[in-house]
Image (cartoon, rainbow, N blue to C red; front, side, top):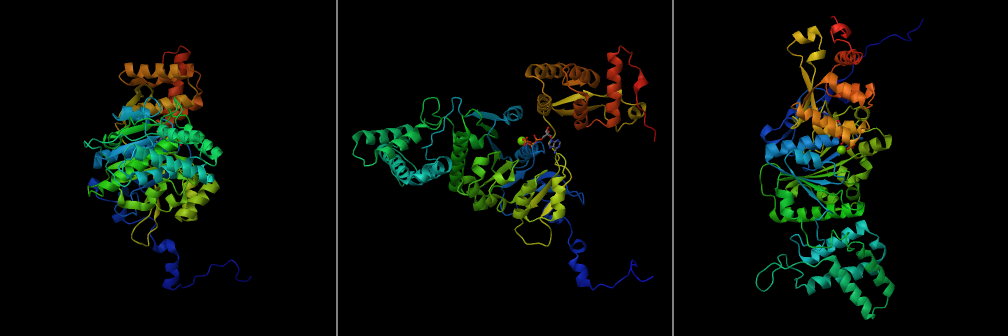
Length: 527
Ligand SMILES: Nc1ncnc2c1ncn2[C@@H]1O[C@H](COP(=O)(O)OP(=O)(O)OP(=O)(O)O)[C@@H](O)[C@H]1O
Ligand SMILES: [Mg+2]
């Protein structure tokens, strides 16, 4: 007996209902935010809950800069590529990819862009002014050295180095507080290089009047890291033209040929500094959209430190006419100052609790959202918008799938041989599936296939007008030693349904056993 377990209805005042936030706050931002003017925004995909198309625009957010995080294979680079292609289409934006590992090279070439490889005959003079006064540039160079070398631990060496740089600008007839440097005839002056700085310090050491010769020696030693022949990428007159990097459509600045992370970071920071200055001088020219997109993918060395230009650009927000896209597998490699200041964060699948903690701490989303982020599939994401207007709407919401650009270079697998009778009669069932050539090659590499075999298979497709029938394709892969599970996954990713995959393997077995290839092995699913 008793009343335990009985359901009891109580009357709740409206205010108590209102506190149950799910009834009151819609779980996604309103249409005005999600659905911008399509001629002034970038389509991303549909929202998960209301299935509303989401068009990214920077009108409603704090600034145009974007962070992208997610585990390896979650779809960061895919998103970035889609984004760049669409902005080129919508806004005619230029894009500069600061390509740490050279992973965008092929794609950029395929998309008709330009690849510039530093370290392979291309140079970037660290002492170029990039439109700055020598005094300002010297400060910047010293700050960069503090980020990338141990110089801040040695104030005396720091002072000596700074002085020597100043001296060499003056010797080269530069006026320290002027932006445009011209000689008496009005011709632009040639900037000094780090080699000249080393010379100034070496001369000073030879005179021998300086009280701390060891400090001088160490300052020289540090600089010589950058001036050794064969590694003097930053100590020769620039061959890379800034103007060309940022106004030539899609450009890949390939840093993979540089010897180490320090050199890559030095290149990336220097380029960012020059671009920032240029944009600052030109001002917000009030063009529609974005003039330039700069991509930093896995550039952890320059996204971590609060004194890095990458962080400063994001902090200073909107005043530059460009957007930075910073991507990483490891969110903690991106400074908290970036997360709390970028206008938009795209979160693809994130697994590690400590990374989720970090994101949730910076962006303040619910535990429900956290859970969803940890379970996202490839190309699915959560978006956080730093909205400029305070609204009762949640600023983090889910996108069912980032919908990619139609690939420019596709390969097709012909399925007509393996479709069931029923599928064949259905006009909605496609006779082939397609995938991007570069993704295809990447997958094969992941399966452990050697370059020669990948080349062979690529050629087979090209010869067949980028087509191959799926059964011969599978037989070839099996011959190369790729296991069925991998082949199955590959086909599935390409959009082949399970039943068709079973049929394909059936056909393959039949062919291999010398069978005639009739419909015997087909699985037919009745409704
Ligand atoms: N939205 C999507 N739609 C369809 N395919 C996708 C999508 N996102 C990613 N892919 C596919 O998934 C694979 C991995 O994606 P991607 O290279 O973008 O991962 P990533 O996050 O950049 O990984 P890494 O950190 O290793 O560079 C690619 O083959 C890509 O084509
Ligand atoms: Mg990637």
